[in-house]
Structure formats: structure tokens, C-alpha cells
Image 1 (tube, rainbow, N blue to C red):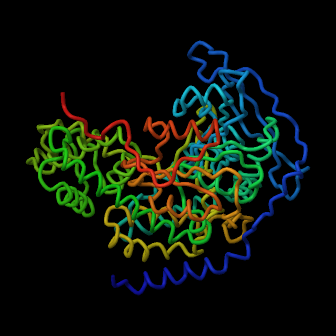
Image 2: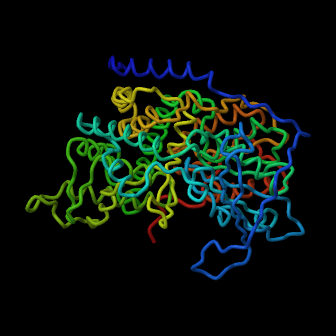
Length: 537
């Protein structure tokens, strides 16, 4: 593929940055099996995960102090919010299963209540969820003081900017965002990288009394699991990583990593459209005719003009792309997505009335309304009792972990190049990067763990990858398995992000692994329990 000169310069700049960032990386040594420093125990108190419901009386909560800066362990601390579901059979209890849902910036606190794991796991383990540093209840990293202040900046960003005006305003807004973070976030912004999250996790592991770690990480949480295995291989009991990042690529070249993420989204979209067409209508509402060509026509129309719906709302390229991306994360959302796309197609084909799209549509034009709403780009749990109800941990972690060029204009050329290979998601993914160009605590200055990833654990790490995972390209799971010193890969044939809890066959393997430390046989390809487009009764 020929590339524009600006795109070539962009790639060259990115590679130069990556080469120059290695000096800032840290390969932390394993402290060894007998070097356990004592820490204070977790002070658990009974709690109810949902105060609107009767208390099941099986949960405890705590806030555990950890150093902001591990170079000064006796200095200022922050509190890590933790919740546990006590093991159902105390006599057979093995220990604690720590859980992280990803993000970065995802709240794991209520994951103590997750139904993804079966009764045998819940009986044998305390299920421990926690909000990582800077997230939700754990001293949230806040770049703004009010929601209104945040909206004044964020509302100027266009998720998929196409015109020069959109691009310039988006880049200006990302720089204003970073300026706000510099003013308001405080010292924690310098210590958000995954190496510090893993240090917190190891401290919590000791604080609950576990000699070794049992952990399940999803999405970004797979980087936490891989980093723990690299830093503390002798302290691993069992680690599951589901929906994997490529640790080496992510920590060394943020630009190339994001380009490959775009390709993963594109692959998942293509498979969604193929499966929709194979199912046909009415099983898949968008299943008539050539689904690929019809989808591309809608997307290309939105590149030049939004679509006004009968209710007056507008579907833009940004809102459409974000909703498609969001729905590819979960198979249960894909039949509704097909209905929405079909409804939008009907509106496009209907004659206009007084400047608005016609109200009549075979599938009901109201199904298209969701496509006019931009889906959030990060997994956050808002705390509405505060004037600023969100947090900024998504970029707080990403910008410290992933090296990016310091010039945000680089991404203009990258977006043009990437959308040639990934026409739906290339530009969308490229413009996730400019914020990190001006971030006040960037990866090139941060303490980071960049390997080695191949330190051998006594029990193989269980790696799980979906063939058509949109957010974490299946190739990332294959590379995760190869990069780790002792790991086995189990694959699932599904368009979805992460798989535990979605396949009974997989959960049998998960339970045997967690309870008995029995690694699954390599090379298994499983099916999910449900179909995206089940037969119509």
C-alpha cells in the first residue's frame, strides 16, 4: 500500500520515539521465594454490594493503604477499595481469587459478585474485586473539578474527525484535557503505570494471607497478569488471562499496537457481517443481500453527511462507529445492532419529509435512535456524589504504559494511512492517541515494566482468546502465549471480547485449572453456549 509522505514521517517519528523510550523502562527483579516483606492485614468489614436489596451477608469490604510512590514506601499513601465474597465452603477454602475486568480504568470492586465463575470456584475461593489505583473508589484520578468543566473540553472532541476543522478542534481539545490533568490530578498521575498496579496487587495478596497469587484478568487485566508473572514468577499459583493484550508490543510501541487493534476491530466486524448474512433475515435483521456492501455504503455516506432520524436526532460517523464497536464487544448486543443498522438503512432509503427522514420504516426507525448516541470509549463506574462524577484513569494508565510521539499532529497522517487498511476503525483508533502526546506524565518518563515476559511459573498461565475479539486481536492472545515462559492457549470461536462465563465447556476447564491447578490441553477450540442470531421460534 502506498502511503502519503506525512504518514511515512508519522511512522518514522513513532519508531524513533519507541527506540528512545527503552531507557525509561524497568525490568524489576523477582524478589525470590523467601523475600516476603510483612504487610498489614486487610481490615475487612461486612458490607452489602447493593443496598437497595436485602443483605446476603456473604460480603466484606475494605480500603487498603498502598504507597503512591514505591520509591518512597513510607511516604504518602492512597486507599485501594476492595470487596470480597467469602468462600461458600470455608472448610475447603483454597485462598483468594483476585479479579480485574480491564479498561484500563475499569472498576473491579463489584466483580466480587460476578456470576462468570461456577459454584465450585465460588465455594473454594474468596472472590476479591478491587478498584486499581486512580479508579472509581480508589483515589480516582481526576483531571477536572466538575462535570461541566469536563464537558467543556470533552464535547469538543470528535471520535472520528474527518474535516480539517474537526481534526484541529479535536487535537486542541486533547491538549486542553492534558493541561487540566496537569493542574488538577496531583502526584498520583506520575504513578499510574501497570508496574505500580501490580505492586499494589502483590501487597494485597500478602495482606489477605495468600502465599501465592490466584488471579483472573480480562482485557487490560491480562497485562496485569502477565506483568505479575514477569515480576513475581515464584509467587504465581494460578493466573488466567482472557482477551489478551500483546504485552511486548503494547509497552514498546503504542502506535503500532493501536494500528493492530484497529485491524482486530475490522476483522470482528467482517465476521459479524458474514454471520449475519449467513443467518439471513429475520434471524439477523440486516441479513438480506450483500451485508458488507450495504454496511460500507452506510459508513461512506456518514463520512460526508450525518443522517437525521424521524425523532430529530442525528447519526454521525462518530456515533455510528462507536456504537458498532461497542456492540461487537458482546454477542448478546449483535442482533440488536443488526436491527439498528437495518433501521438506519431504511431511513436512508426513505423519502425525506420537510427535511426529516420519513417516519415509516419496515423494522421501525426507532431502532436506529441508539446509533445517534456516542458510546463511551472507556469502562468507568461513575460516582455521582462528587461534582466530577467520572475519573481519568483510562488515559492515566495508557499514557504511562504506551509510548507515543510527542507531536499530536502525527496522528493526522496515521489516520489517513490506517483507514486504507481498516476503513471503519482505522481513523477511530488513530484518534485515541493524541491525548497521550501531550500527557503531563508520559511513558517516556515513567517507570514501566517492559519484560522479560518469559520468566517461568510453576503452573502454566491459562491464556484464553476469542477468534474474533474486536478489542484485543486474536493474534495478541497467540503472542501472549508465546511470550510467557509457561502458558497454554484455549481459543473460542465467537465474535466477542473475553470468554469466561460464555461457554460451559470453557468454564469446566477454568474450574479445573483454578481449583486443581490442572492446565488445559493446548490447541483446544471451543464454541460459545449461545448464538448471535438464534433461530426464530
